[in-house]
Amino acid sequence: MGTTLTDQNSIQEEIKRRLKLGNACYYSVQNLLSSRLLYKKLKIKIYRCIILPVVLYGCETWSLTLREERRLRVFENRVIRRLFGPKRDAVTGEWRKLHNEELNHLYSLTNIVRVVKSKQMIWAGHVARMGEDRAVLRVLVGKPEGKRPLGIPRRRWEDNIKMDLLEVGGGRGNRMELAQDWDGWRSLVGTVRNFRVT
Picture 1 (spheres, rainbow, N blue to C red):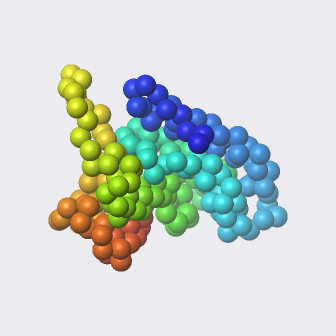
Picture 2: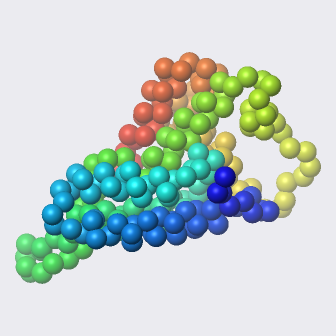
């Protein structure tokens, strides 16, 4: 399916590969993104419809760490800086790059990490509503045999879902039971997508 799997079940290689493909896509439309003839809204649509799907292919199964979240945000900020261009400093009169806070103010849509988290929540709800005979559900709720390796355990996909639910106040019940209420789960997904970290 075009996803990189490693024997250590590390998602770092997959994210590296996706960012590399996203960069290739970005450079293929770079002239459009830096053009002064196109409106900012159209440039944002180009980013959201052409570049972002390439980067986020298969993101529903990623188990993001803070390092990967930061790499995704750096990629997005670089593209958005190209969209909005430089800013003239009011005091010195020199052109400078936009700061991250300015980018967040100008780009009011959901950031890339929030898009990933909401896609993961949608997928988690979909899997939780599957029948007991489906292999995907059995893999999700199954417990592997054997011993865990020494050291701090790596963050699992399920841990990310639990943390996202706690972050938006949806961690008060069993995730599998919460997902059965489709409208309630959709509301939680919307909250995860639009949640602003201060």
